[in-house]
Length: 104
Picture 1 (cartoon, rainbow, N blue to C red):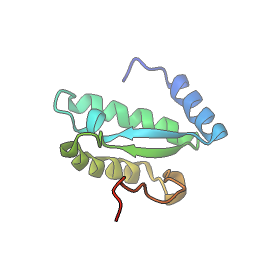
Picture 2 (spheres, rainbow, N blue to C red; picture 1 turned 45 degrees about the vertical axis):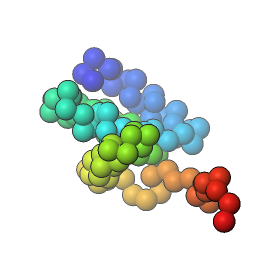
Picture 3 (cartoon, rainbow, N blue to C red; picture 1 turned 180 degrees about the horizontal axis):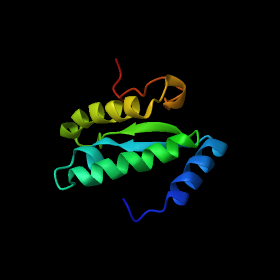
Picture 4 (cartoon, one colour; picture 1 turned 135 degrees about the vertical axis):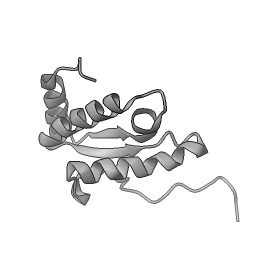
């Protein structure tokens, strides 16, 4: 993550805030995956911190298409706490949960 200029993170945060777009905290792929070392995770959190300073909202991603990856969502919550994000800055769908196609 170090090669990504801070100006890019700031512009991303500003644009996300202006457009109401949430930035994903990618828990499984960027925080939990074993091939990423501690240095990468630290730099990723620093990147998110700069984006957060600009007022962006965030969503949490866990690679939910893989049921085993859902455990990674805990890492996203830990990072959100570390960034000091309050509930207003965490994106949530503004609709009812989706239902399966099964009829009752």
